[in-house]
Figure 1 (cartoon, rainbow, N blue to C red):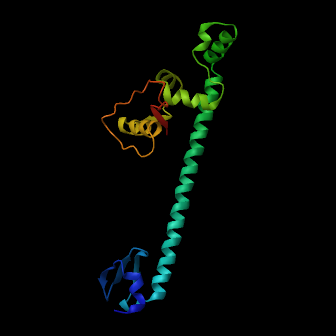
Figure 2 (tube, rainbow, N blue to C red; figure 1 turned 180 degrees about the vertical axis):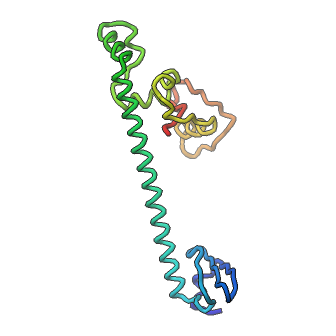
Figure 3 (cartoon, rainbow, N blue to C red; figure 1 turned 90 degrees about the horizontal axis):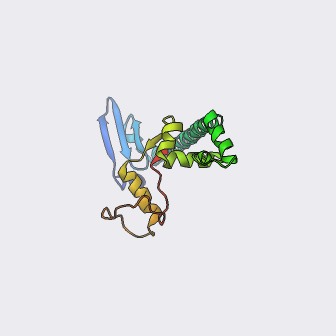
Length: 181
């Protein structure tokens, strides 16, 4: 074996193919790449393939970040639309007027900003049914439990399914029932 390429293949290499069709080579740092001849397995080719893989990884990372940002923008657009529908709704305006006049009816819905509105969507079932328009998805029991556990127990304590969450106990940090889509 050529010692010059040992560093590139010391963690393993897979080569599939034949001299007529070429070869598909796989190593961890390069992932898959194609060569026509086994004589092309040189340090220079490995370095080029490692650089190409790094570029692909960076591009994939940037694409994932772009998708996350796009998702957040979509969520903000949805929240803005729902919140505007909410505050411009005649029922809400009537409740606000009633609240200013001292009526108990005005205490049904209080949301002074978008974040309180989002909290109500995530925590309050009745409010979500009335104003949410399917903008959220319910946490599974396991997702909600893990969130509750991570928010309410000190670092280092292991997950214990024997501990039954007391979702409504004010001692614990509140855990939402749903998350924004």
